[in-house]
Image (cartoon, rainbow, N blue to C red; front, side, top):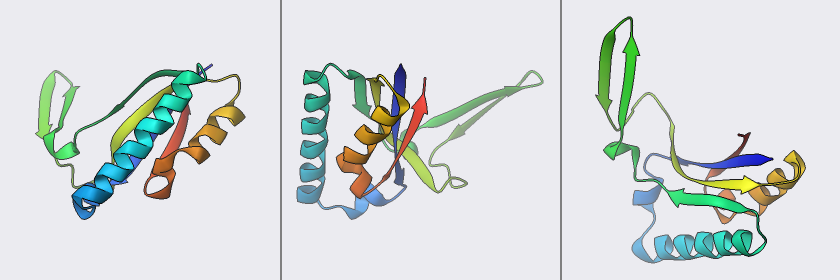
Length: 112
């Protein structure tokens, strides 16, 4: 079964980390992804740029709406994701608990 781990960060969390702390966090996530890949569980993963560079698009009743980020109405942004191939929901949750980002962000588990 496919599961998505969404890494939910506060808007300013990346800015608060210094360069060295950011490098340590990035390296830990790369090792985590490498381990998942070696175990045959990783289907895809990536970090996302800040929502300040994002755009929201909606079409309602024929009207288009385009809103540039950052999106003040949300408290968190999706900072990245892991797409997994797990046997069970419990396995996906266990992987989320082991994710380094769980120490500084929220890791949301969603079945695809």
